[in-house]
Image 1: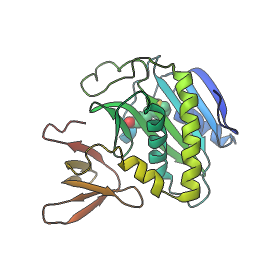
Image 2: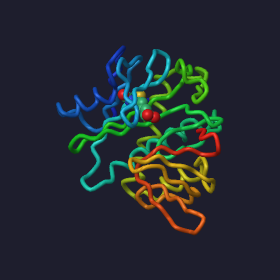
Image 3: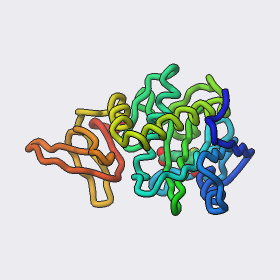
Image 4: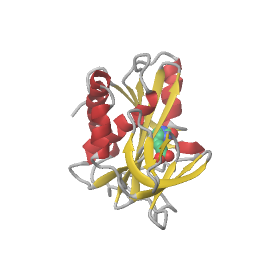
Length: 237
Ligand code: BTN
C-alpha cells in the first residue's frame, strides 16, 4: 500500500498540530499532497476553537491541498468525510454528522477541520483509531486499534485523492449524494446552535453549497452554513 502519486508523507513523532504544521509548510511552498502525520499533538485543534485531545495511539493527520481558484473550500470537509467513510466502510457502521463528524453508534469517532491560508487548505483529520480520549467516553467511540494509524493514513489518502479529483471534475453533487446516503438524522427533528441562536426543524437536505436545510412545521425553510447540530430530546450526537 502506498500514497497516491504526487503525495508525500511527513511523519512526525510529536507536533503542536498537524494542521498548523501543514500551513507553516504551505507558507514555505510545500506542494499539494503534502501529508503531515503525527503520533501525538500537543495543541490539537478542533472546530469552533475547541482543542482536540491527541494522546499517542490515535490518528492525527493533515493533507495539504491547493485547490484551483474559485473552489468552495468549505466543501473540502465533505470531501474528506466521504473519503474517511469509504475507508471505514469495511469495518464500521458509521454515519456522517453535519458538517464534518463521523459517528458510530451515535458517538463521535472522527473529526475534520479545514483551515485555509491563501491558496492552500489544511484538511485535518483526527480518528479515534485506538482509544476513546479520556473524559469523553459518553460521546465518543474508537476503532479499537484494528489498524495502526500509519496504515489508516495511507488508505485515507488514497480515498481522499479519488474523491478530491471527482469533486474537481464533477462538482459537489456526487460528494453530497454520498454524504447524504449515510447522514445521521436526515428527516429527523434537529436543533442547530448557530452564532445567531438556536434554530429547530426537520433536517431536510443539504444545499448545493453544503448548507443544512431545516424545515419548520409550517414549511418555512432555514439554511444554515455553520453551527452545531443536536438530534432528539437528549440533544445527543
Ligand atoms: C472537530 O472538532 O471535530 C475537528 C477535529 C479535527 C482534529 C484533527 S487531528 C489532525 C488535525 N490537526 C489538528 O490540530 N486538528 C485536526
